[in-house]
Length: 257
Image (cartoon, rainbow, N blue to C red):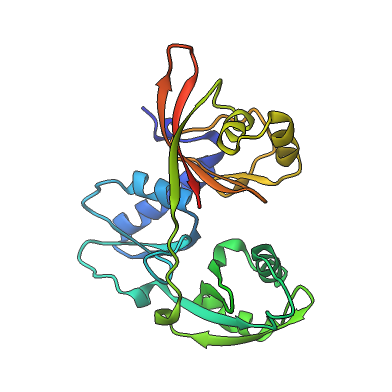
């Protein structure tokens, strides 16, 4: 059985990259530090590396609650330290009492510097402060060039990783039934909205599956998929239990509070 059979077709390029990392570490006895990976990519790396005795795997994104993390693949005789992940953190200061900025504003400004999304990790937005984690190799560039977010002038303060705020997610779990595993059908059941209201959200690129925009209402969901709908929040497929006697799918889902 091919390893590709366990994954979606669109994930094959990333799978090939992970296989290349694995081969390099095993054959050359060197370590490999990746860019930031989203949770789905982290899951794929874990599956592919598996229980291989000749390679070790660790993830870190600034603290244990980080969502986006860099992976460190290394020979078993090495010991990994936090410093090996080469992270830098900043606090963004702006007049938050007079301006309301959202996650996409900060994300857009970072991307506007010509940076790839893979070069920075979590963007933590709190009531009175915003923190960003970036790869240390671009930290000087970010510090010199990130001067505005939207229309707001900002100041950056470098902070140690120990000052990154720990954020925890709470999920409300429940069981739903759906006539199919189509994206629009499952989202309709999760958020208790008609498909006629869900479809425009998909068409307008407001829906992501595993951190990738999906524009097809008929997209088929699988176990472990993370879903997000701009304006509605995030959810996930915990378990697809199977079919009911009425030929509907029973799914355990989580909805972020």
